[in-house]
Amino acid sequence: MTDASGRPACRLRHGRPHVDWRAIARFAAPLMATNAIQALLNLTDTWFIGRLSTDALAAMGAIYWVMTCAILVLGGVGFAVQTFVAQAFGSRRRARASQAAWCGLWSALATWPVFLLLAWAGPSVLAPFHLTPAIERLALEYWEPRMWGAPLGLATWALTGFFTGVGATRTTFAVASVTVIANVPANEYFMFGLDLGMAGAAWGTNAAQLAGLLLALAVLLSPGHRREFRAHLTWRPDFGQILRQLRIGLPVGVMYGADVLGVALFQLMIAQTGNSAAAATQVVIMLTSLAYLPAIGIASAGTTFVGQSIGAGDREWARHVGNAVIAICLGFMACMAMLILAGGRWLLPVFVPPIDAAAREAVAVGLLVLWPAAAYQAFDGLYFGSASALRGAGDTRVPAITALLLSWFFFVPLAHTLVFARGQGWIDGLPQAGLGALGGWLALMSYAMLLGLVMLARWRSGRWRALTLAPGS
Image (cartoon, rainbow, N blue to C red; front, side, top):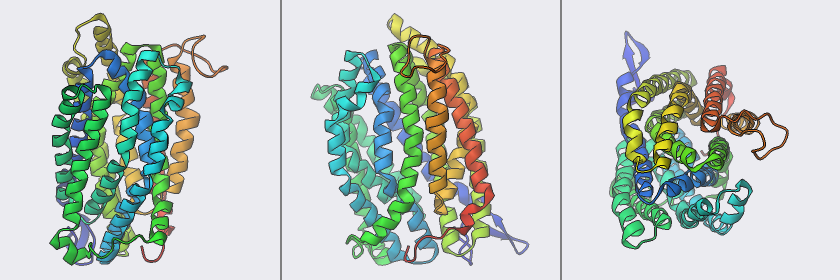
């Protein structure tokens, strides 16, 4: 994967280094498959929950992004593992790479009390959004057990960040495969075998993530990794290293968390306009995950390649390979947008069977909002590719602040304006267009386009060249 000078995804042509597109494809393919499996996991959960009721789907839509935001923000140090591992691997400091993975695991363990508090505080979290009693009850049934098991996912992220950072993307794929395979019988058992309903969906996800984590730990401590990375000797907590990873990782968590929390509020706004619109939005979100989750896999290759290049001391090559990965993300997401539009008419009824008037209305709304959902996919590719390249360079604070400002001061007010009609809404004084679910998706489209362009501009500015991680990273 690297040439003699340590440049990743590089091949010489006429004595000059060029980006090896095949090497990028070989590296990214297991990551794309890994994230496609995550999309399949989300769709599987959606299908199982859809078997309960349309109200259950609406409740999942109301709680899903709030839950994801909490997990992303607290899991920020897990995102930093890949950056530190890639740079350590590029500088041939193998023990430092495994130490970063263990620090990510210790950080995940430390989040458990916070998640327990969030589980207890679920009613207070949802209270400001005035959901109907039936939707709120179902949402809370899922929320509490899911918060109890969330650190399992954070620990798995830390270990898969290690495997991806050292180029072992097939191991990352294997961990994801075990998780999604375990999820199907776990959901069936907890939801219907034990008759736990929405709570069973959460317990099924927790059980599946535990299976993936156990496999990842077994691989980390396997003889090969003990020899190459001394993984069995670097397990003790290094609080200085944990703090360094927090400085890089927490802004990443905040960046993704701000993005996701904005989407959470957008879905809660739509949920307030009706159950059919909420169910349609949840299903379309899951369908678009078929595009953006594989693209995140491609973008993750950019984090590794940029980090390894910087670790090898070649920032110019980091720029070249980062640009290449961004271009691939852009092209992939543009192609997926076309597929989403072409396949939506057949896919939507699979997840919302039109058995009653509410379900038929949900399918009709879903077909309408597919258009703005498809329109912004290429800009999402710019965002994922640019943000991941910046993460590989350790440039996370400015992108995090940018995402936070755009989400809270552009996207959320715009969604509020476009979704609610006069006399509705949460904030007095804003104009109200009353477009319902379509208005929310138009706001999300505008936000994604702007965010993608801003992140690309940050990467191309080259400000990341002046950044260095702390000694010993």
